[in-house]
Image (cartoon, rainbow, N blue to C red; front, side):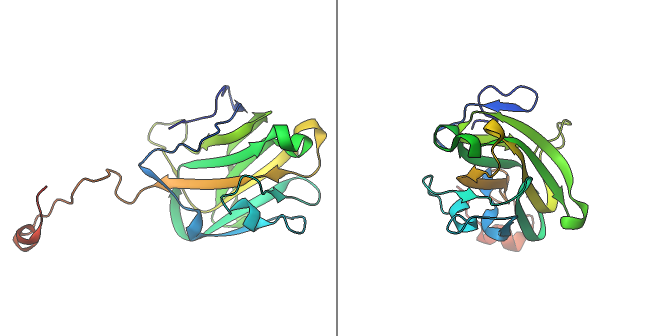
Length: 191
């Protein structure tokens, strides 16, 4: 997996990956969420952001900051946000400063990460891990991706895809459960 985008330096992300590469121990959490945006142009709404088509995009319509809100019914662990943006196609619509916020709802969102994107084309990876090695994920009900500014002082923004990843329920893939009771051990299969 690419932990961050090429050229990361103190919150600055350049480049972008043409292929989406994510570790096997992570899974996409977005289907468990309710998605909303602060604004959108007709035909370029939230469905364009989640349709797995890099030719479509969400386009905001209004004053900055532009927001994508991702709300979960129960508290979830999130580890990675991945955006597909394309400076070559979108120019002034391409985000340049992003703030990622987490909280229980709109009333108490706090910034957990910020990133400056430098002419990105492709998948941009933003890890939600903290500075402490024990902080490998964010435990939250809501995540907000706020676009604070665009390249070339653009007003509206284009984001072609957003994916949100958290740890898989069983953090060690393919490892069998260890049964301790006699009855369960009798019916278990040893591989």
